[in-house]
Image (cartoon, helix red, strand yellow):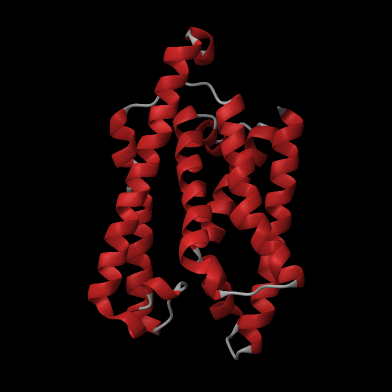
Length: 213
């Protein structure tokens, strides 16, 4: 398990750092200030979730006596991160993949964060994380962060006119279409979270109490 986690964490940090330098170079080349470029980088859902997932794995590997270790040690948190990282991959595939034709390092960074990390982290959750602690209500609770993120994006966009993704660009689509898209994504988030809970409960039912320990 440790080797699997280490490989996943190293890939996660590599992808995040690679995307950081690529994006900062691009944004600043477009005339943005370093601070503005950094804020834009940190405003992508993909970057946020991959950072949370990679930080969680790193914390579990190092095992520091801290709030972070206690937080990421919870099976419910690992399951929540699995739901979030699945959405990262699914949303990119259906909403963004056809819009970009990436090559070289851009392609590599994108591949790691949108394809490799979702598969590896969900694999980590499926294989190594104990099951049996999730409840159906958890799926609804997990919607809190995506809703906060969407609210942040709308407020930030209203202030500076910049939106991280074309499917939530109010400047082009208007608030009505953006809100409808957001509601659809919330439903997808919820369905994905319910699926994670279903797998958790089914694993215990069919495999027995050993998965709870």
